[in-house]
Length: 173
Image 1 (cartoon, helix red, strand yellow):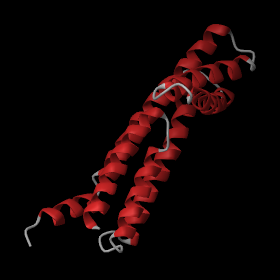
Image 2 (cartoon, helix red, strand yellow):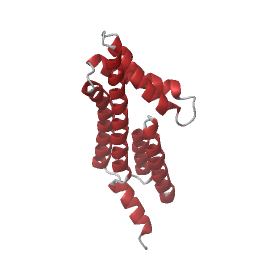
Image 3 (cartoon, rainbow, N blue to C red):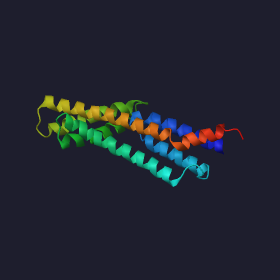
C-alpha cells in the first residue's frame, strides 16, 4: 500500500506541475495527491499543519494568479476595467481553447486575456494603440502568473511529505 501511495503522490505531483502552464488547476491536483497519500498511509506522515500549509500555498498561488493580471494591465496604463477584461477574457479563452489538444487552453487564455483587456479598455473610450499595450500587459501578467504558480507547485512537490516518503522507502529495514 505504501508503494502505491508514493507512486500516486509522485504521479499526481508531476501531472499537477504539467497542468499549471496549461492554465489548469495543477496546484489543486497536487494538493489532492498529498491528501490521497495521507489517507492511504493513515496520515502517519501528513499532519494537519502540513495540510494547512499546502492549502495556504495553493490559495496564495490562485490569489497571485488573479492579482498579477490586474497588476500588469494597470502597469501598462490600463484601468481596472481592463484588468477585469483580462481576467474574464482569459477564463473564456481557456474554456474555448480546450478542444484543441494540450496547448489550446494556453493559447486561448493568452488570446482571451489580450482581447478582453483591449476590448474592455476600448469600451472605456481609450485610443486603439493604447488598448494594444494594455492587452500586452495582460498577457505579460498571465505569463508572470504562470511562472509564480509553477514555483509554488515546485514548493508543494518537494515538500517534507514527499521527501519523507521517499527516504523512508529507501532506508534499509
